[in-house]
Length: 271
DNA sequence: AGGTTGACCTGTCAGC
DNA sequence: TGCTGACAGGTCAACC
Image 1 (spheres, rainbow, N blue to C red):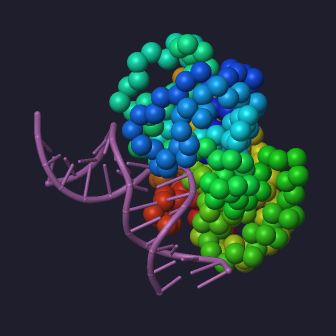
Image 2 (tube, chains in turn blue, cyan, orange):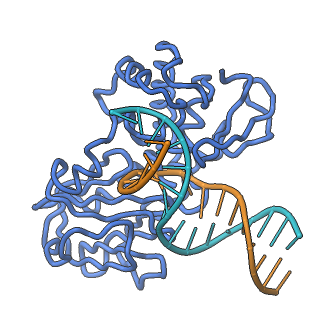
């Protein structure tokens, strides 16, 4: 599910309620992808100084260390003043008052909640250390992005999904940005021209910003911090549209498999 | 070293 | 109706 826009929508939804608050209690349900990495008692009482995002990770800055939250494939994070009883797929609650706080709902349990001493230590370094540049960061540079992309031999879509050059672009948005930049997803990254790759950089920024504006994409599981749907998927030009006409040329959108993921593209417009 | 594949876990849906 | 297999937004570890 959650790619950068969904995580950012979630961040914006929960940050006002968490920033400056103290952790009143924590409930752990079934195991997520990794263990928490510390005792629950160690976290209780700590103040949350901010809610940031790095790639698809939410980063809560605490008095001592950071709490990383990843939504995996099916996760969603809700804030409610009254959380109520947890359901079977509610695997983590972080309360900032007697009954209110955030709740992680994640049926597939590919998500994670992990404490680390700092971004650049322990699990923080392991999870965040190798991540590529932030596409919506102030220092994002299209030329530097293009030159780094060109150092990879794999198919351009695989390079985007790997997250080593740029973070936050998952399967939906990778399909969309390659369509906008008119690049065939199967083309080797190193064989694409610099100008075309700079267009790709702009397509990534435009698409992610637009998706955030739409509240993200809701295919199945994703909801914002207050349960609201995202609507970007209604504006997708290729994702999920196999056999339907290309919005640019009218020819049928194709569906192929790349690395066990679905790739949608227009063979005429994307070369 | 970089690229590729399997694994993790559960729900849903198409096909028989 | 019920079973089986394929597929789904991510990404790490283990292989070539």
